[in-house]
Length: 412
Ligand SMILES: C[S@@+](CC[C@H](N)C(=O)[O-])C[C@H]1O[C@@H](n2cnc3c(N)ncnc32)[C@H](O)[C@@H]1O
Image: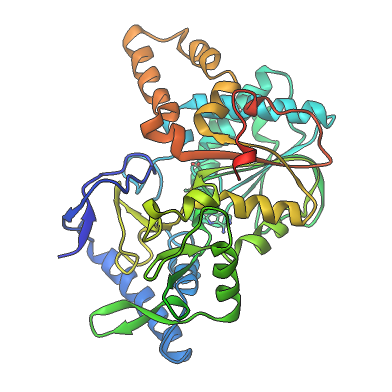
């Protein structure tokens, strides 16, 4: 029997404190089994070609992005009702309105510019932002979306049909990161958590990379001495204040974060990049309460911890080490403009006012429904504390409103 969390995740908040009990995985259709089998044989071939072992980051990369088969490269229905998980923009339009208020401040400060959204999901955030910026008379000159998933790109295009043509015509899709530079805002909500991570284990003698082998019963974890890059990265983590890796400590880290961030931020000439995701400062990420790491999988609104099942049909994620994000950004010349919880961020951006405005034309019962779902964005035991927001600036100097309630940059 596979171990599955008893928590049926309706948002992507991972409650690791909830005990794991034996629950069956959601059953797969014949087509899904066929899809799984194809991806399994592709990954098995890669493992064989590399001498019988691949790193977990390589496995995660194939499971999420293998052309035509990976979770984000194929057709599985991902977000929302009937999908695998729900995100903040899906939960309530208040989220998008607050982000728009932050964009308005940035666009005004840099004298106008563009918005680049990375990983736009169903397009809900784009719609809410454009409508709010239109009301505020502060539209971006262009709203570009970088979306690797063909399924989500189609859903975005359909969702954006709800917009007036004067707004919709500002939106375009990129197949890869922009090659030009622009002033304005880069947005990425729940994207960093999809970047492939290396899993490691610290032993008395050395650092091991927890990789993947193919067995007659499917894929399995297999340790191997870490290569120089992973060993150096884990050694650097171990030197962090408050981090105490003891024999058997297991976790993960994202070696692809630095090159990914550098590629993304290269296009920002002037303005701010906003990253929202579940994560922690390094000191807390690697404390005793997160022993075992934060890897989680999402399939049909269930959260579990087995990346070797539902191949190509489930999301695989890890929390974000925001200290790593900050260090990577500073190393390439950006400044940390703020780091706080999602609750503080949204409250600083007029969460209450936006909620009141949204409820004005609703019936009493619809207003109560609106308030209940919006509350999940800020409640500490839901998304309010687990999710963090980090702003990285280039040639940018105005204090951002989203960090006016509380800024935890000093804790990074
Ligand atoms: C969890 S969804 C979040 C979607 C949306 N931002 C939201 O909040 O509803 C992750 C999004 O990031 C995209 N994505 C995943 N990996 C990516 C990558 N390496 N680069 C850019 N986008 C990526 C996915 O296709 C998807 O749109």
